[in-house]
Length: 179
View 1 (cartoon, rainbow, N blue to C red):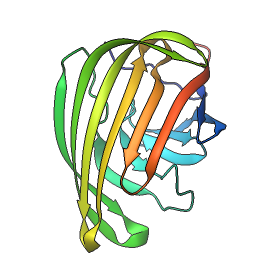
View 2: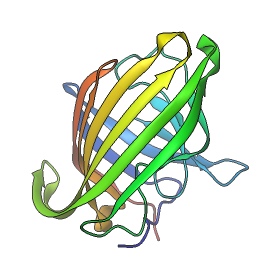
View 3: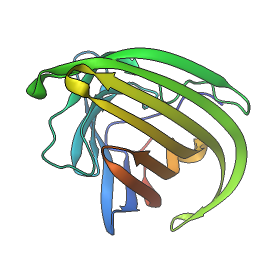
């Protein structure tokens, strides 16, 4: 499966944390990366949804964490059985902490997924992400995405973190920019 066709103005509405929130591509920065409003938090991604700047969904006041190279939560093309690994450097300047992040991803296979927006044939992607840094920073993140090519993103998301807790999201609607 090829990379998504993400465009400024694309909007996904999701149900998460007992609320309905928008996930919207707001602009493209000078480096060609997407500036995204991820459920009320400003993040920056590459054209494949891989993170360059992240803000916590569960701690609204948390400062951004940055990577110099995109953190590979998606490695296109995607197909059942594909696996990847990455070691990345991160920093959270506001807390004066930095460290390494070891990501392991695997495409499990096609699954039928029903969410408020409908029923989809989706590729299940499992990620295991170990984070270690200065000052004793440690986190272990596990997440599963159900990615649907027709909506250029996941329709279901299950995130678990020692630090941030649990976040589950399901797509309610998708409104793409005119192609």
